[in-house]
Length: 82
Ligand SMILES: [Zn+2]
Image (cartoon, rainbow, N blue to C red; front, side, top):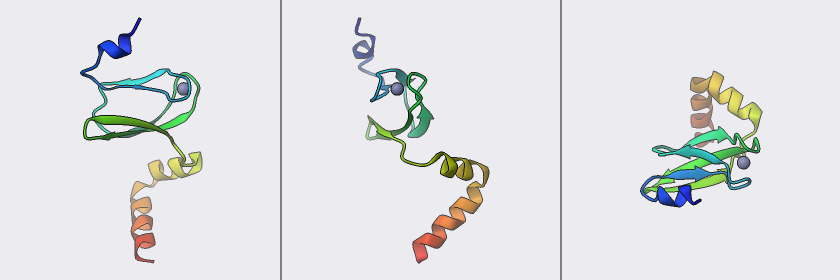
């Protein structure tokens, strides 16, 4: 049983904590919650290679970014100039 290895041509992303398959055919970097262990993970796609990291952003920060994206963008610009 090596279904992950058989899909060598595709990007199969597994949770780095519990091994649960998070996503198949990843085309872009994203953030999600592992369905296996509930860990927040950050999926980074670069040059066809996929890396999985702990998502270190706080839930509060994520909620804020989702609800007020434009405000978050402005705040980021503000920090950049300080
Ligand atoms: Zn997991």
